[in-house]
Image 1 (cartoon, rainbow, N blue to C red):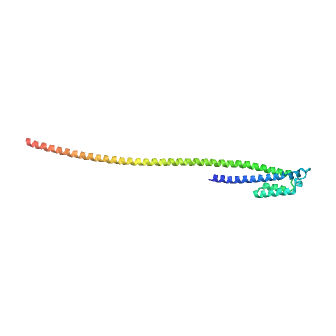
Image 2 (image 1 turned 180 degrees about the vertical axis):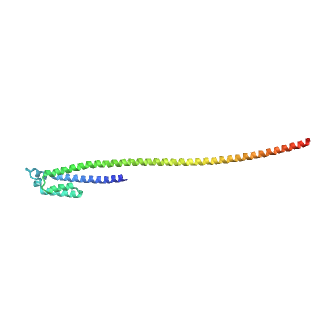
Image 3 (image 1 turned 180 degrees about the horizontal axis):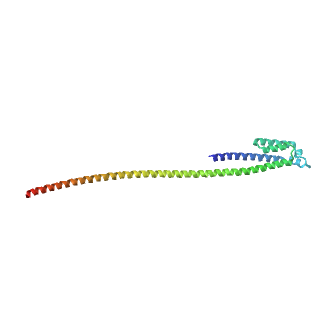
Length: 212
């Protein structure tokens, strides 16, 4: 959950940084367009010595460019654009201003590459976590299915055990009944045998008396 929140925050920050860099690049491109305008170029081309660019650059154009960059700097909260605006507000050579602009482009490009690498890392990490989550979800589903099957098997075994116990009880009852019947039959047999033995003895005594 923490990684998902971190990735979501990083995505929002990444998109914000991309937007700011795009607006900075657009502002710099507009500045270059002003610098490359015919009037500015003609004015610069007329400079034959090493005097600063601001000495030959028209005040109106300079002011326009400075105000434009400051507006963009405030809108984007860009310190880079603000630094160029400061250079324009001072007696800074044209070559220094162009180097500052080129430095901004290089800085924007370097940040873009670093941002893309970091964003790629977070995106890859998020995809890996999503894949792991899907795997865990599937494993959980499989385990749940196995548990359900085991529960069904347990219920079936309980039913079989119950039936077996019933059968065993019936068999025990039947055996006890058979044992009781045999015991009764044996008692009856013994009783009959005793009666026969007594009858024989009585008959023998009677015959013996008659013979005497």
